[in-house]
Image 1 (cartoon, helix red, strand yellow):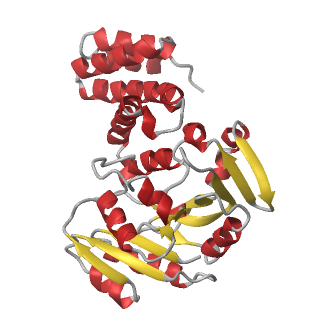
Image 2 (image 1 turned 135 degrees about the horizontal axis):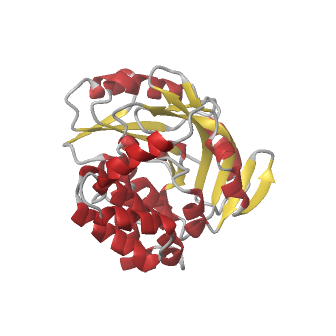
Length: 322
């Protein structure tokens, strides 16, 4: 089992050294470390070279293209992805390698993760702990102490949501290549869409321990809430247009998630004062299902400008004081 670590990096000099140090600290060393310098204008390439990584420099084409470039160049039969601002626990690869031996036919191995602020403060100790109820609704088999087999993940990932960031993934390279890698046309939700395609063909093994640290900072893409919401809407459209790329039944299973994204996007549009866009989004959501939340947003989209703010102010004035 040969493991290639692939790290996409664009202007990541401030974080990359820590990420590479966490790779070097692995108790089961990787066979190679590739940093794809995606058109950086800072010292990203120099930091990568200083830490002994193989550097591939490309024009700036985005994170998906950078990951695909690294995967195509990798010599290993397994790919461990790591984003340049994240960190690995020293046992991360060792425990994933041990899990792989329990079910050699499985092509995706993940782990739990914690979240920390850019300054180092812990924000969340375990995503798995936060989503125990969602795991309970899935087909989960315990293979060994701390190792779970997650079945039917082609649809199960909709229940879990975006639970597996790229930095937790250990992937069989041939499976990634057979599925076309990351979609380079997507700017957001590319990791979610990628896994939905992969899970058409394989289960996942999960290490029930937070072995990856996800750094939360103001520049993080996932903090751009409205853009992420619109990306989920677009992902639902893509699944509906190309159901053959995904697990059977995914288009129907994803529809409630898309409906919530449509309503969230409509709420953002109303806050901006863009009522035509809000009404179009609300109409699409209503075609899926209507409920009190839909009715409230639909009403708000037809009220005169300023009415929502006035009603909110009145509600605050009438609220009981404690």
